[in-house]
Image (cartoon, rainbow, N blue to C red; front, top):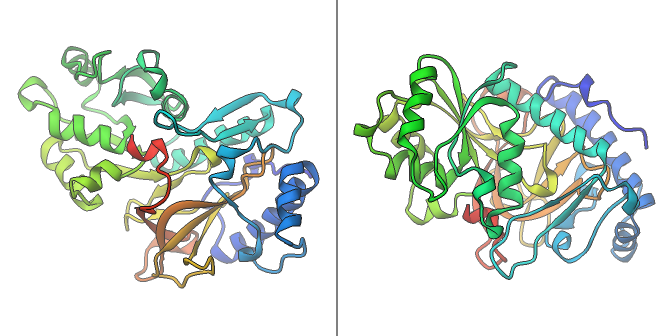
Length: 353
């Protein structure tokens, strides 16, 4: 299979019709590529009697996400493995293992950069990371969490970790950071519940000398703890604005199993959006395609995975495709909303971040 030159494509540059044609042809090629190069994937497709002459996108086979915890799935020889990504997980949980060759790793970084550039621009901004330095993580906190921090941190400069090794807010260095950068754009990154805890619940305004008006917050990693205290996405943004004057807030949805092709929230309609490199399908409890506006399992599709058969995955997350209303993003993206994890499924560690 000839790899896509991702440098030639911008994430939101094709109309829906153009994207549909391009994406379907490329995802078919990827399916055939993995069938030819992954013994495990070939066995699965043969066992499920999936054919290769697909006529529609929803015919592309998917793998349940738990298979990446049970098996070492790859479409390269072991000597070509450049990096192995692990999902996060609580003690005793199995973790996904994602095997990357150097080409796949580079593609992930390039596409992530292209997607984020649409939000933060091409300049590397001063960056506040709402967490501890990964070198202070315990073993249970490593893997996907540290990988996400390290992955996003390359888009910033002059990094400050908000929390010290005791997970307490470092007000001294926070004030030094804000003194230098509060009057210009700066990037903030963190996991949804950790951001809410530290930048809303715990932070003491009397201890900081500037507000966060010019900050651009990127947050993701699950809403489980936020949902437990009944805070919606709208309320989340409202509370952070009321307390810190932070108004540029973007949620993202992504999996370690498809690192790079994250789904970013539209700044106009606040729904998550697909890019040229990604697509989603919603399936009902019988795994049939659900109608727009109906809740079901989220199937995520990505053109990035070439070294492992992770291009079409059925997650344990529940979502719905949004077709009502007009927004500029609907001209090139599928808009959707994530409602949370299937209650009876095994909860992945990243939902608890």
